[in-house]
Image (cartoon, rainbow, N blue to C red; front, side, top):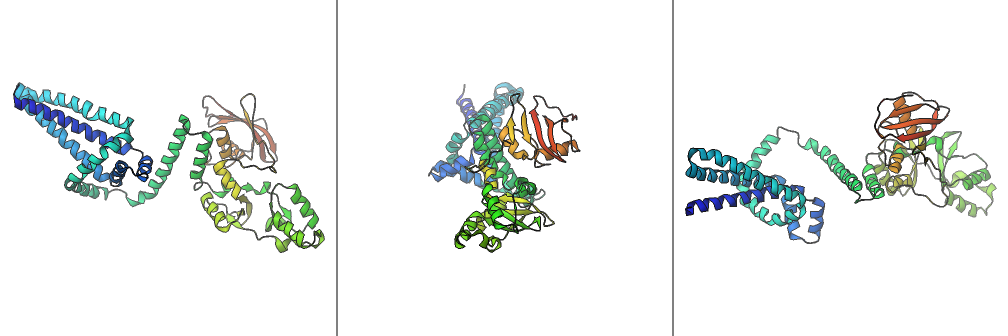
Length: 429
């Protein structure tokens, strides 16, 4: 074997190694955790800083990698073809093509990419200094490639997709949380809290408000002693006051203001003028997002708001605690009354009050009932059944069995729900 052949073989092996380096680097840099790299850079890790600099301009990095990878693959194949022709004649081109295809696919692509996927963060930190040098060296060529790519992308949507990109980022975070929860690395309760934060901008006040039929209100023209008696019976510290009709809310009474006023009149209830110290009501649209309303609560230093529809009619009320409960779960104190609205039965079924929000049921039972068409469980049943069902009727949809237990007038008050092992989309009733 002549020295020329040996040098050619060594050159081919070196080029395949370079191909493996480029392939592994591409996979490692694209699969590396951006959050971990950012955290390491904050700790002063120089390699992580290099990774982040490369990812800031991904088109330059990818362009340099692809250009380098293509160059070494083509050069290796050319050397192999020349050597094969020298050793076996014209048929050597066929031998070289088959051999180089196998070598490049296995050693230049599959193996390095597989390793890079398994150890993406570690490999990204290792190759980043070298890749920055490569990107700098090949920048004259990659700039030409970038120019051509930009001209092509002018024919496709650009900035109009920014909103979609923002949504994709939220969905990526949500997907990561769900995946970690399924794998057991994140507790389900913690996953619900993190998901609750992301949901604030998607949910509206109407999705979680206390409906007007469940509001505790007082007639402002009632005897002051009767108002005090009702407040003492209530678990709430703020009570909406109405005049003439329950929908006409004219003020909100805070128990602390009531006690202060009582102290000023020497605890003589007959001297109380409720409207003199009651606070004006704060009305907010039912279409306001929870994120916006949370910010408004913090800005106004308020705790409660009354919810109105597009016609100005009161639909319910919302408190700061209601929004916080969407994140951390149920918040209870020593004065709260504990209503078992979701009751697990011995046979595996669940008895649920019709007014229970679907979102709360999904979070407590780890179910996936749809939340798009209705807010409460009763609303979902009516939407799917396309009628107001009677007690005893049974419906099956979305992989769950719903049995109507009780109905009060036209409202479903209790439903027995069972999650089916195999989904059955045929409704029955």
